Image (cartoon, rainbow, N blue to C red; front, side):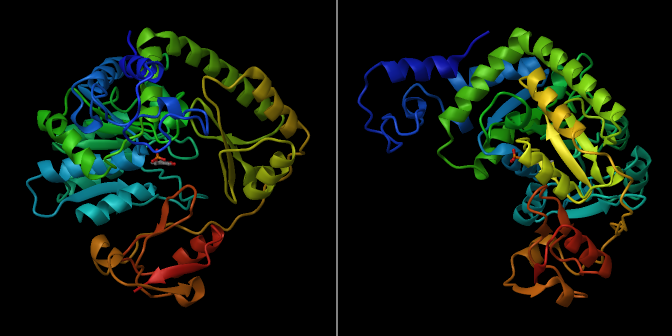
Length: 443
Ligand SMILES: Cc1ncc(COP(=O)(O)O)c(C=O)c1O
């Protein structure tokens, strides 16, 4: 087990070397971490040509995740998603690349479609859902869509923001049979590789996936992994760094790289799996107690606690405000749900505080919700063409029948309600209002 990046930076910080290099703080303490915030100086390796200490740390992490290759990213899963789709585009023999994806993608997927000029065939939920975060797509829907032809890649977001998990194993088998690569946005599920029974996308058969290390592991915000499976085409790994560099700054943060490096040692040592298992037990007991109080929970993800607020008689945003008054800050809320994210470092006392706060709030009878259906949209032009035009802004009530210019997402969870090039329908307007979005950019 090794921490080559940390060892290098610590030794450098203690060496007394005069810093005639970036960054401008020169290692002097303003915030407190400056002495460890270096740039790509001699010996510090290059993130996008990692043959030294960064490469060694990445190799250790790849081993821990059981991948052919794991790349560190310092600009989140957002950068890794663009990179994965860039790899697919560069390795595809099709003139235009079409990706099959359930509609609950993160904004980064749309940005990748704009930048790489990709087409998307969307899969829509079979019944109305209370949230744009949920996909509720069966493996059979993938099988049917692949059977219709014209697909170059399948893309799945799992876990979603509410903690629902897709059947990646079944979907990957369908993709393999059809000879189509499967990539997974696993931003919320880095830790799933270290559960007693791994449910990490790479273990379940995906060709590539991204993990936001910062969301569930002890890493700084922005730290991420791009994993490439041992069964994926070799060329993915050969071009991955160059593709990733197109979507990143030439000044990656060494603070983030150090946190990925320290995390790597913890994952590789096997220590994390034990810490995680303890947390899973604590969180599942907390979920059990909340259910016994009458709270309705949803989602299968082990470390997420998602309250189905509407089914407990509350608007999720109001419930989140009530909890803030009790000094509990959730990860996310909308009209229907409140989401709490735990990790291996969430203590029993913190779960107790959440349970105590919720015990003091009465569970009421379910709020009747009119759920707008997320239906197939009429497309007027490719995503890129619509997104890169001069637009004007109108109120949502004036938008009916107009073509969406810039994709509209609720700012959290950054899932699109209407995508560039689509015609804005009545149903879309209802969903926009549900997410308190009152103006849109149209052509
Ligand atoms: C499902 C999903 N994918 C991707 C991302 C982007 O991740 P990052 O913030 O690490 O860029 C997020 C961010 O919240 C997300 O929820």
